[in-house]
Image (cartoon, rainbow, N blue to C red; front, side, top):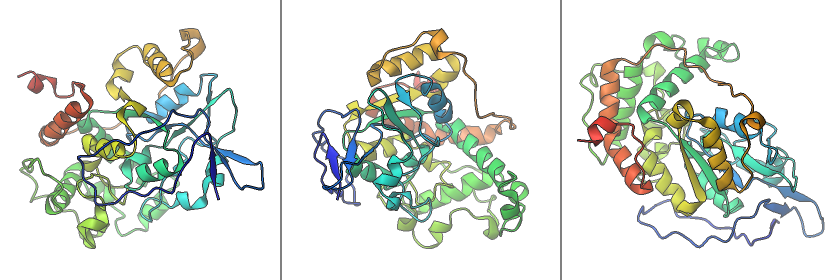
Length: 356
Protein backbone atom coordinates (compact mmCIF):
# COMPACT_ATOMS: atom_id res chain seq x y z
CA UNK A 1 0.00 0.00 0.00
CA UNK A 2 1.55 3.32 -1.08
CA UNK A 3 0.47 6.84 -0.29
CA UNK A 4 2.11 9.78 -2.10
CA UNK A 5 2.61 12.77 0.17
CA UNK A 6 1.17 15.92 -1.35
CA UNK A 7 -0.92 14.43 -4.15
CA UNK A 8 -3.23 11.54 -4.85
CA UNK A 9 -1.91 8.80 -7.13
CA UNK A 10 -4.15 6.17 -8.65
CA UNK A 11 -3.13 2.91 -10.26
CA UNK A 12 -3.46 4.34 -13.74
CA UNK A 13 -2.81 2.20 -16.81
CA UNK A 14 -2.81 3.43 -20.40
CA UNK A 15 -3.85 1.26 -23.32
CA UNK A 16 -0.95 -0.05 -25.36
CA UNK A 17 -2.84 0.50 -28.64
CA UNK A 18 -1.91 4.16 -28.76
CA UNK A 19 -3.54 6.87 -30.85
CA UNK A 20 -0.97 9.61 -31.32
CA UNK A 21 -3.66 12.30 -31.59
CA UNK A 22 -4.25 12.79 -27.89
CA UNK A 23 -5.58 15.00 -25.15
CA UNK A 24 -3.04 16.05 -22.52
CA UNK A 25 -4.31 15.28 -19.00
CA UNK A 26 -4.57 17.86 -16.23
CA UNK A 27 -1.45 17.69 -14.08
CA UNK A 28 -1.37 19.32 -10.61
CA UNK A 29 1.54 21.47 -9.45
CA UNK A 30 4.80 19.58 -9.09
CA UNK A 31 5.96 18.46 -5.64
CA UNK A 32 9.63 19.10 -4.88
CA UNK A 33 9.96 15.80 -2.99
CA UNK A 34 7.41 13.11 -3.92
CA UNK A 35 7.44 10.82 -0.88
CA UNK A 36 5.58 7.58 -0.33
CA UNK A 37 4.45 6.37 3.07
CA UNK A 38 5.36 2.69 2.91
CA UNK A 39 2.40 1.73 5.09
CA UNK A 40 -0.43 3.40 6.99
CA UNK A 41 0.96 2.16 10.30
CA UNK A 42 4.54 3.37 9.73
CA UNK A 43 5.82 6.97 9.43
CA UNK A 44 8.67 5.73 7.20
CA UNK A 45 8.84 7.49 3.85
CA UNK A 46 10.50 6.65 0.55
CA UNK A 47 11.31 9.84 -1.37
CA UNK A 48 11.90 9.70 -5.13
CA UNK A 49 13.07 12.22 -7.76
CA UNK A 50 10.84 14.92 -9.14
CA UNK A 51 13.22 15.53 -12.08
CA UNK A 52 14.09 12.80 -14.57
CA UNK A 53 16.49 12.79 -17.52
CA UNK A 54 15.27 9.87 -19.67
CA UNK A 55 17.73 10.37 -22.53
CA UNK A 56 18.66 10.40 -25.21
CA UNK A 57 21.49 7.86 -25.06
CA UNK A 58 24.83 9.08 -26.47
CA UNK A 59 23.68 12.72 -26.26
CA UNK A 60 25.57 14.11 -23.29
CA UNK A 61 23.52 12.78 -20.37
CA UNK A 62 26.62 11.69 -18.44
CA UNK A 63 28.26 15.10 -18.84
CA UNK A 64 25.08 16.90 -17.78
CA UNK A 65 24.59 14.69 -14.74
CA UNK A 66 28.10 15.17 -13.36
CA UNK A 67 27.92 18.90 -14.09
CA UNK A 68 24.50 19.38 -12.50
CA UNK A 69 25.29 17.56 -9.25
CA UNK A 70 27.94 20.21 -8.57
CA UNK A 71 25.02 22.48 -7.69
CA UNK A 72 24.42 22.63 -3.93
CA UNK A 73 20.66 22.27 -4.48
CA UNK A 74 20.96 19.02 -6.46
CA UNK A 75 21.44 15.67 -4.75
CA UNK A 76 23.47 12.96 -6.49
CA UNK A 77 22.04 9.46 -6.79
CA UNK A 78 24.03 6.49 -5.49
CA UNK A 79 24.71 5.43 -9.08
CA UNK A 80 24.50 7.54 -12.23
CA UNK A 81 21.87 5.40 -14.00
CA UNK A 82 19.30 3.98 -11.60
CA UNK A 83 17.13 2.49 -14.39
CA UNK A 84 14.18 1.84 -12.09
CA UNK A 85 11.38 2.45 -14.60
CA UNK A 86 12.21 -0.59 -16.71
CA UNK A 87 10.18 -3.77 -16.60
CA UNK A 88 10.89 -6.05 -19.55
CA UNK A 89 13.14 -9.10 -19.98
CA UNK A 90 15.17 -7.54 -22.81
CA UNK A 91 16.26 -4.47 -20.83
CA UNK A 92 15.88 -5.54 -17.20
CA UNK A 93 13.07 -5.78 -14.62
CA UNK A 94 14.10 -3.19 -12.08
CA UNK A 95 10.58 -1.86 -11.49
CA UNK A 96 9.53 -5.09 -9.78
CA UNK A 97 12.00 -4.30 -6.99
CA UNK A 98 9.51 -1.73 -5.67
CA UNK A 99 9.48 1.93 -4.69
CA UNK A 100 11.46 1.36 -1.49
CA UNK A 101 14.37 -0.10 -3.47
CA UNK A 102 14.21 2.88 -5.86
CA UNK A 103 14.29 5.36 -2.97
CA UNK A 104 17.46 3.80 -1.52
CA UNK A 105 19.41 5.40 -4.39
CA UNK A 106 18.53 8.90 -3.13
CA UNK A 107 19.09 10.71 0.16
CA UNK A 108 15.97 12.67 1.04
CA UNK A 109 16.90 16.24 1.92
CA UNK A 110 14.45 19.11 2.04
CA UNK A 111 17.12 21.50 0.73
CA UNK A 112 18.10 19.38 -2.27
CA UNK A 113 16.34 18.35 -5.46
CA UNK A 114 16.42 14.64 -6.31
CA UNK A 115 17.20 13.77 -9.95
CA UNK A 116 17.24 10.51 -11.89
CA UNK A 117 19.47 10.41 -15.00
CA UNK A 118 18.65 7.14 -16.78
CA UNK A 119 18.80 7.43 -20.60
CA UNK A 120 17.40 3.93 -21.04
CA UNK A 121 13.94 5.29 -20.16
CA UNK A 122 13.55 6.82 -23.62
CA UNK A 123 14.53 3.47 -25.13
CA UNK A 124 11.98 1.24 -23.41
CA UNK A 125 8.25 1.11 -24.16
CA UNK A 126 6.98 0.87 -20.60
CA UNK A 127 8.96 3.66 -18.90
CA UNK A 128 6.61 6.60 -19.56
CA UNK A 129 3.64 4.80 -18.01
CA UNK A 130 5.64 3.52 -15.05
CA UNK A 131 6.92 7.03 -14.31
CA UNK A 132 3.36 8.34 -14.53
CA UNK A 133 2.11 5.71 -12.10
CA UNK A 134 4.84 6.67 -9.62
CA UNK A 135 4.87 10.48 -10.01
CA UNK A 136 2.47 12.11 -12.42
CA UNK A 137 4.05 15.48 -11.52
CA UNK A 138 7.50 14.57 -12.84
CA UNK A 139 9.56 17.07 -14.81
CA UNK A 140 11.90 15.98 -17.59
CA UNK A 141 15.22 17.21 -18.92
CA UNK A 142 15.92 15.71 -22.36
CA UNK A 143 19.07 16.03 -24.43
CA UNK A 144 18.71 15.63 -28.19
CA UNK A 145 21.61 15.09 -30.58
CA UNK A 146 21.83 15.09 -34.36
CA UNK A 147 20.39 11.59 -34.93
CA UNK A 148 22.99 10.85 -37.62
CA UNK A 149 25.87 11.30 -35.19
CA UNK A 150 23.97 9.65 -32.36
CA UNK A 151 23.39 6.48 -34.43
CA UNK A 152 27.09 6.16 -35.24
CA UNK A 153 28.09 6.90 -31.64
CA UNK A 154 25.77 4.13 -30.42
CA UNK A 155 27.33 1.67 -32.88
CA UNK A 156 30.85 2.54 -31.76
CA UNK A 157 29.84 2.42 -28.09
CA UNK A 158 28.38 -1.08 -28.44
CA UNK A 159 31.48 -2.27 -30.30
CA UNK A 160 33.64 -0.92 -27.49
CA UNK A 161 31.38 -2.48 -24.86
CA UNK A 162 31.70 -5.96 -26.37
CA UNK A 163 35.47 -5.85 -25.91
CA UNK A 164 35.80 -4.27 -22.49
CA UNK A 165 37.67 -6.48 -19.98
CA UNK A 166 34.38 -7.06 -18.14
CA UNK A 167 32.65 -8.28 -21.33
CA UNK A 168 35.31 -9.76 -23.58
CA UNK A 169 35.14 -13.30 -22.21
CA UNK A 170 31.38 -13.36 -22.81
CA UNK A 171 31.87 -11.95 -26.31
CA UNK A 172 34.53 -14.49 -27.26
CA UNK A 173 32.30 -17.34 -26.10
CA UNK A 174 29.16 -15.98 -27.75
CA UNK A 175 27.58 -17.01 -31.05
CA UNK A 176 29.40 -14.05 -32.66
CA UNK A 177 32.96 -13.95 -31.31
CA UNK A 178 34.26 -11.95 -34.30
CA UNK A 179 31.55 -9.28 -34.22
CA UNK A 180 33.96 -6.39 -34.63
CA UNK A 181 35.35 -7.89 -37.84
CA UNK A 182 32.13 -9.36 -39.29
CA UNK A 183 29.51 -6.71 -38.48
CA UNK A 184 30.14 -3.25 -39.92
CA UNK A 185 28.02 -0.14 -39.46
CA UNK A 186 26.48 -0.86 -42.86
CA UNK A 187 25.44 -4.33 -41.68
CA UNK A 188 23.78 -2.84 -38.61
CA UNK A 189 21.92 -0.17 -40.61
CA UNK A 190 20.82 -2.59 -43.32
CA UNK A 191 19.50 -5.14 -40.83
CA UNK A 192 17.53 -2.54 -38.90
CA UNK A 193 16.18 -0.86 -42.03
CA UNK A 194 14.74 -4.18 -43.18
CA UNK A 195 13.14 -4.81 -39.78
CA UNK A 196 11.60 -1.31 -39.63
CA UNK A 197 10.35 -1.57 -43.21
CA UNK A 198 8.88 -5.05 -42.79
CA UNK A 199 7.19 -4.05 -39.52
CA UNK A 200 5.55 -0.97 -41.07
CA UNK A 201 7.59 1.43 -38.92
CA UNK A 202 8.66 3.72 -41.78
CA UNK A 203 5.51 5.69 -42.69
CA UNK A 204 7.63 8.49 -44.23
CA UNK A 205 8.96 5.98 -46.82
CA UNK A 206 12.70 6.71 -46.77
CA UNK A 207 14.76 5.38 -49.64
CA UNK A 208 16.80 2.30 -48.75
CA UNK A 209 20.58 2.57 -48.99
CA UNK A 210 21.99 1.27 -52.27
CA UNK A 211 24.01 -1.28 -50.31
CA UNK A 212 20.97 -2.66 -48.45
CA UNK A 213 20.79 -6.05 -50.18
CA UNK A 214 24.55 -6.62 -50.20
CA UNK A 215 24.96 -6.24 -46.44
CA UNK A 216 23.48 -9.29 -44.75
CA UNK A 217 24.43 -9.77 -41.12
CA UNK A 218 25.70 -13.31 -40.45
CA UNK A 219 22.84 -15.26 -38.79
CA UNK A 220 24.93 -15.89 -35.68
CA UNK A 221 25.54 -12.14 -35.28
CA UNK A 222 22.06 -10.75 -35.79
CA UNK A 223 20.99 -8.31 -33.08
CA UNK A 224 17.26 -8.11 -33.86
CA UNK A 225 16.39 -11.40 -32.17
CA UNK A 226 12.95 -10.03 -31.19
CA UNK A 227 12.09 -9.90 -34.91
CA UNK A 228 12.45 -13.68 -35.13
CA UNK A 229 9.25 -13.93 -33.09
CA UNK A 230 7.09 -11.07 -34.37
CA UNK A 231 7.09 -7.35 -35.11
CA UNK A 232 4.97 -6.74 -32.02
CA UNK A 233 7.63 -8.47 -29.97
CA UNK A 234 10.06 -5.75 -31.11
CA UNK A 235 7.67 -2.80 -31.16
CA UNK A 236 4.83 -3.38 -28.65
CA UNK A 237 3.42 0.15 -29.09
CA UNK A 238 2.09 0.85 -32.60
CA UNK A 239 4.19 3.46 -34.43
CA UNK A 240 6.25 4.24 -31.33
CA UNK A 241 9.89 3.66 -32.17
CA UNK A 242 11.03 2.10 -28.91
CA UNK A 243 12.02 -1.53 -28.74
CA UNK A 244 11.97 -4.31 -26.19
CA UNK A 245 15.76 -4.59 -26.48
CA UNK A 246 17.82 -1.46 -25.82
CA UNK A 247 20.89 -2.97 -27.49
CA UNK A 248 19.35 -2.34 -30.91
CA UNK A 249 17.80 0.72 -32.49
CA UNK A 250 20.53 2.83 -34.06
CA UNK A 251 17.82 4.15 -36.38
CA UNK A 252 14.71 3.78 -34.22
CA UNK A 253 16.16 5.63 -31.23
CA UNK A 254 16.75 8.69 -33.42
CA UNK A 255 13.07 9.04 -34.40
CA UNK A 256 12.64 11.50 -31.55
CA UNK A 257 9.19 12.84 -32.40
CA UNK A 258 7.75 9.35 -31.93
CA UNK A 259 9.28 8.94 -28.48
CA UNK A 260 8.18 12.37 -27.34
CA UNK A 261 4.60 12.05 -28.55
CA UNK A 262 4.42 8.87 -26.48
CA UNK A 263 5.70 10.69 -23.36
CA UNK A 264 3.32 13.59 -24.07
CA UNK A 265 0.42 11.17 -23.67
CA UNK A 266 1.28 11.03 -19.99
CA UNK A 267 2.84 14.41 -19.25
CA UNK A 268 2.18 17.90 -20.69
CA UNK A 269 4.86 19.55 -22.88
CA UNK A 270 5.48 22.27 -20.28
CA UNK A 271 6.95 19.58 -18.00
CA UNK A 272 9.83 19.10 -20.47
CA UNK A 273 13.07 21.02 -20.94
CA UNK A 274 15.11 20.27 -24.05
CA UNK A 275 18.85 20.72 -24.51
CA UNK A 276 20.52 20.43 -27.89
CA UNK A 277 23.68 18.32 -27.51
CA UNK A 278 25.57 20.49 -29.97
CA UNK A 279 24.99 23.53 -27.74
CA UNK A 280 26.96 21.82 -24.96
CA UNK A 281 29.87 21.42 -27.35
CA UNK A 282 29.64 24.72 -29.24
CA UNK A 283 28.18 27.31 -26.86
CA UNK A 284 28.63 28.70 -23.35
CA UNK A 285 28.02 25.70 -21.11
CA UNK A 286 27.80 27.92 -18.00
CA UNK A 287 24.92 29.87 -19.53
CA UNK A 288 23.28 26.63 -20.64
CA UNK A 289 23.41 25.19 -17.12
CA UNK A 290 22.13 28.39 -15.55
CA UNK A 291 19.19 28.51 -17.96
CA UNK A 292 18.35 24.97 -16.83
CA UNK A 293 18.67 26.02 -13.18
CA UNK A 294 16.15 28.81 -13.72
CA UNK A 295 13.70 26.32 -15.26
CA UNK A 296 14.22 23.96 -12.31
CA UNK A 297 13.62 26.83 -9.89
CA UNK A 298 17.08 26.84 -8.31
CA UNK A 299 19.70 29.59 -8.14
CA UNK A 300 22.16 30.02 -11.04
CA UNK A 301 25.85 29.73 -10.16
CA UNK A 302 28.91 31.74 -11.12
CA UNK A 303 31.67 30.21 -13.25
CA UNK A 304 33.82 29.83 -10.14
CA UNK A 305 31.02 27.99 -8.37
CA UNK A 306 30.51 25.61 -11.31
CA UNK A 307 34.24 25.06 -11.66
CA UNK A 308 35.90 23.25 -14.55
CA UNK A 309 34.08 20.69 -16.67
CA UNK A 310 35.49 17.48 -18.05
CA UNK A 311 34.08 15.10 -20.64
CA UNK A 312 33.60 11.49 -19.53
CA UNK A 313 33.11 9.81 -22.92
CA UNK A 314 35.63 10.11 -25.73
CA UNK A 315 34.96 9.84 -29.45
CA UNK A 316 38.21 8.11 -30.29
CA UNK A 317 36.86 6.20 -33.26
CA UNK A 318 37.25 6.59 -37.03
CA UNK A 319 34.90 8.93 -38.91
CA UNK A 320 31.72 7.65 -40.51
CA UNK A 321 31.85 6.73 -44.19
CA UNK A 322 30.34 9.42 -46.40
CA UNK A 323 27.79 7.08 -48.03
CA UNK A 324 26.58 6.03 -44.56
CA UNK A 325 26.19 9.68 -43.54
CA UNK A 326 24.31 10.52 -46.74
CA UNK A 327 21.87 7.67 -46.13
CA UNK A 328 21.29 8.68 -42.49
CA UNK A 329 20.75 12.35 -43.32
CA UNK A 330 17.99 11.44 -45.77
CA UNK A 331 16.56 8.80 -43.43
CA UNK A 332 16.21 11.26 -40.53
CA UNK A 333 15.22 14.35 -42.52
CA UNK A 334 11.43 13.93 -42.34
CA UNK A 335 11.34 12.62 -38.75
CA UNK A 336 13.41 15.63 -37.70
CA UNK A 337 11.00 17.98 -39.47
CA UNK A 338 8.16 16.37 -37.49
CA UNK A 339 10.16 16.84 -34.28
CA UNK A 340 10.71 20.52 -35.06
CA UNK A 341 7.00 20.98 -35.75
CA UNK A 342 6.08 19.18 -32.53
CA UNK A 343 8.40 21.33 -30.39
CA UNK A 344 8.29 24.56 -32.43
CA UNK A 345 12.08 24.67 -32.64
CA UNK A 346 14.73 24.43 -35.35
CA UNK A 347 17.48 22.05 -34.26
CA UNK A 348 19.71 23.11 -37.18
CA UNK A 349 20.98 19.59 -37.83
CA UNK A 350 20.27 19.72 -41.57
CA UNK A 351 20.25 23.48 -41.95
CA UNK A 352 21.56 23.84 -45.56
CA UNK A 353 18.71 21.66 -46.87
CA UNK A 354 16.16 23.19 -44.47
CA UNK A 355 17.01 26.63 -45.77
CA UNK A 356 16.19 25.75 -49.37
